[in-house]
Length: 159
Image 1: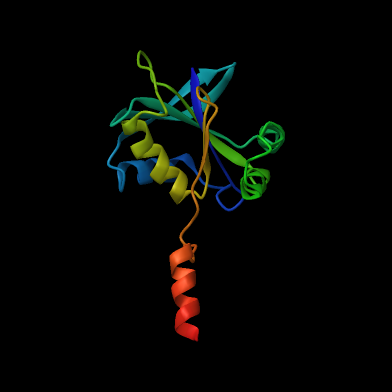
Image 2 (image 1 turned 120 degrees about the vertical axis):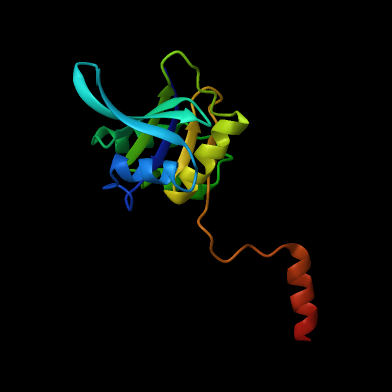
């Protein structure tokens, strides 16, 4: 069963599943293998994770992904930051995370987040937890926002 989606693009649109596997096996130290199976009458390449989480990851680059992202934007609450809608509008591909055979993936669990958060960060993407409806957005490092105390101190030092 589909449990989560990692939305990304356009910079990573051409990303191959084997590069995702190398990242998962390398810095994230996941046990991963590649397999091909039949889904809805077509052959699908997938990554099967065994440790620290059990999941199957499939790559979706169909043209409909952008339309599905637009549908997700339409369902965002009015309080959602505008940057989130802009980020979703640029998504052209996604990784679909399914339950592994015989095991349930819980995207909000600690072990799952320990894989999904760094993967989304590395891909400059968003994670959609389909069970909770929660979207998680991870900014790439840049100039960190200054807090109110830093602004006050910098104003006092300029005088």
